[in-house]
Image (cartoon, rainbow, N blue to C red; front, side, top):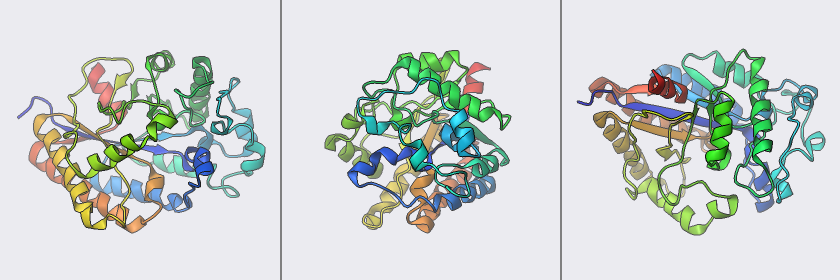
Length: 325
């Protein structure tokens, strides 16, 4: 048996429409309203299985009204070469008055549910769903965005210490900004060429997309479990697997994807390593029941591994605390 028990880390990118608004030009727009049901249901399932999870939340979602949102905007805003990436130009046209009138741009009630649920960590997904590797923006713009996100969380008496970078875009200079602003952990990318941080145009290359799908169902890249971090600031808590939503078109091979995840978790439990699973609550909005049934099987496997090997459930912040202790 390893000296340290293995751990399951779960992180969620909570963004609602802020995470997909720039994809509408390609005809991509989810029906996001069911996400309002997904979040409390996930919290209930996490309580049932004693799951610790990190909710990386877009800063725009924290506000109670459009007036409060306008007052909380960062002083510097990114000037992307692709202007459609910025949410700021059309705020007055796109955003309603409050959560009741516009439940896809505001989520204070859901954030409070997260904070009121045991063992849940509220992290940041930046203020504006910020893209660190896109042309036109600067490191100073990012720092202003990060500080706005952390300030927005203050009214919840919450100190944000973990970050998940939108579209997994980051580099060392952005990590340095995080470190000097009190961010202690970040979710790094898998050490795979088709998962490396990249601009939107590169991330959507067919070669990368095909490999990501194949790796979800077949053992292309191994378990992607990783050793307990021993240093770093902020501490890298890298992703192991993206929990893809259930595909009805691929229903016949979905058991392969489940077994891929379960085998990786077991390897982490047996070797004292960490398996980091992540997804968006919005991913469950379509095929709601199928996605929750799939997750239930994963969490039941975790319960078995906890009994057999002492596997733990940890937030990103808890991994960072263990590293620094």
